[in-house]
Image (cartoon, rainbow, N blue to C red; front, side):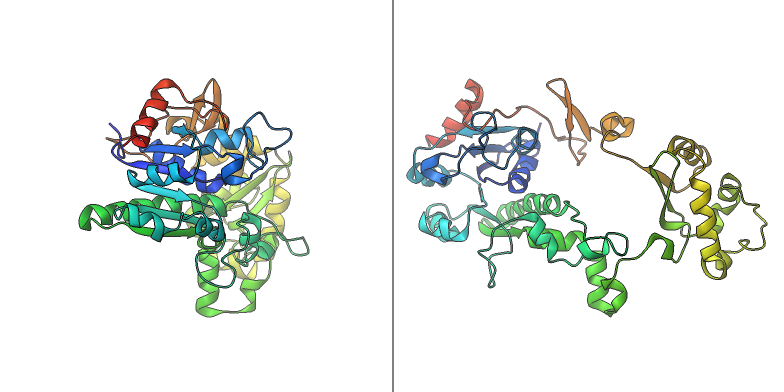
Length: 381
């Protein structure tokens, strides 16, 4: 049993993040029909070094995540697409606004054929304003949020976080679900708009909201890890093997009796025997001591102690870690696809869980007979 088994989605997207948004719907059973890009429809050249059919800018690994659980449907022209949308519940696109208008794929045009349609449009900067037609590129959208200059250490160049598009993908799926819920209650279709700009701002919302509320230069400048107000909450310290240990113990008194001995300090050391001393008068001295102490042992040493003592801290892992993390496996955050590890499902549902029923073929490939039959059923209505 799947949560969205009675929902048909037309996926007319080309970008990774928008396609991931529809993949989230497919994971929970939606019948997502992915329109296969054709030169006559999109004018998108294939990448010269990519496998046959994979469009430029989308790697094989991205394709596997963005198009799982979808069925391909090849359309000869826009007239066929218009006909398909007539019988769909949801239409999702990330094409430029001007192209949607020239091809008769606007919300107004499609809603005239199907008033109950949920029309979701994914863009770079939203449907209004002077920049609505700018290219939808995540790094450029992230550059506007104000976060990139404050992520690195002082004096270092801005850092692109790369996570904004995933916020945007989830917002796309959430927007569609909210619109479907509204339609269930009122019978009305509607347009849903999400953008990379909004997704990146939402990802930076704690800092952006704080600046909007109180302003101040503090929010505009990068903060050195050695300038943290609390040496035991926020800063990261290097281990001897080059990995870093991050501490998140704002209530230092709660952990001090367990923490002090492992970093070579007496619990009763008069320099650090109160929270106020640790975070105020002796703050710099404690930071300097911890910076030296953590360098004495590898990250595996610190990981073992953190787990054994129940400290609120952890080792900052690299990409090799999630693939073998037993917690990620136990919760299906990492799954095996065709014998190789792959990103799994970020949401647990007890009665209607996400499932992997179809692995994607390359663009331009052919769906299985069962997959084709379900897509053809909708197309022939």
